[in-house]
Amino acid sequence: FGQPLYVLEVVKTTQEELRKLAEQGASEGTLVIAEEQTLGRGRHGRKWYSPAGQGIWMSLLLRPGQPIVFAAQLTLLTAVAVCRAMRKVSGADVGIKWPNDLLVQGKKLCGILVESISEDELLKYCIVGIGIDVNLQQEDIPEELRSVATSLRIESGARQDRAKLIAEIMHELEQLYDLYKQEGFAPISHLWEALSVTIGQRVKIRTPEGELGGLATGLDSTGALLMTDDHGKARTIFSGEIQLGR
Ligand code: BTN
Image 1 (cartoon, rainbow, N blue to C red):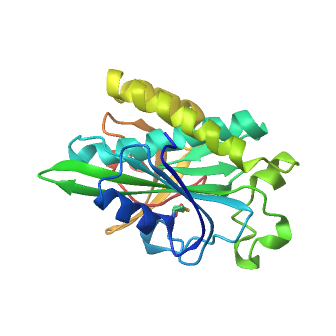
Image 2 (spheres, helix red, strand yellow):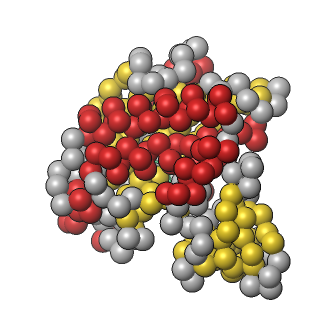
């Protein structure tokens, strides 16, 4: 993974740059990295703050050829790979909040956005977007985000080499993707649970029917979150945003 590699200066979003390449037939493993994004996008239609030079803003092309339901598993796999790489390179105590936010001490420093294009019920390709706040300092983080966002530099106490981190992420992703193709989701799910800061915690989730509180207990075989709600009823959460420890 990481070949071919496109390193760009300023783009709206690396997701769209890679999508154009994917439509032209780019191969699996193609990676687009930008120094700055002017329209970085996050999950649930949110913006992703992507200032010049201090972060890693990149998108990787996968062509898994699997049924659409596997997209959720690929996002969890990506979270495991990035989490392992960040821990290895920086030593920071990075954990995963379901489904794929990476946190240190409850503050977010990495987000993952997987956008899938499907054809005949199969995933034609997936654009795996990874945004990491690497070397931002306290004052670089917009004030309204300071209580919820942090960076690898702030948490590890040292500037981090972005190229080294990208190389480690690609290495981890390639290994886990091979494991996934050979042995399915079970081994990935175990790795995810071991790095998770969600399982065993009280969580709250907003659903169309209102707010649901309970205890997160694990992942099911598709990657959905299992929880026992406050009335003792087993629930399966397929998507959404959770709050921890409420
Ligand atoms: C989230 O909401 O947590 C996901 C954030 C994903 C951000 C990355 S940065 C690289 C890629 N390009 C984008 O516009 N978004 C993703």
